[in-house]
Image (cartoon, rainbow, N blue to C red; front, side, top):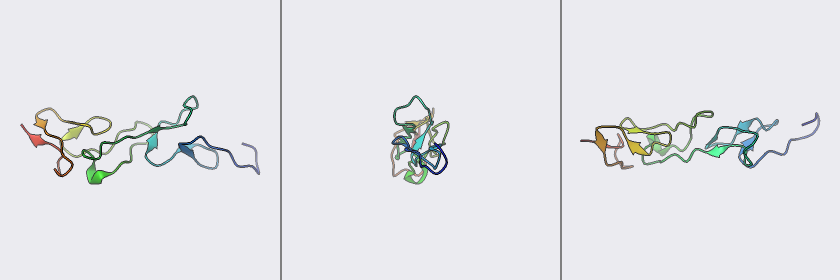
Length: 92
């Protein structure tokens, strides 16, 4: 954008220079029509049901017995992913 003008950002992008992803989004890419992709965290597996993720990797903040970028599955040796379980999954 030129000085004295505001950039028109893609749907999932913010910033004066359209250089950051909106909350709950990651992986800013010029070839993405929306700019950034949604974190899509599985809140049953995230700490405090937080939906935010790392800005570049997209890794959500998983409970201790949960794994996967979106905190969508139990770690090896664990089962039964439940949101009300503070650790996310039970030990086998």
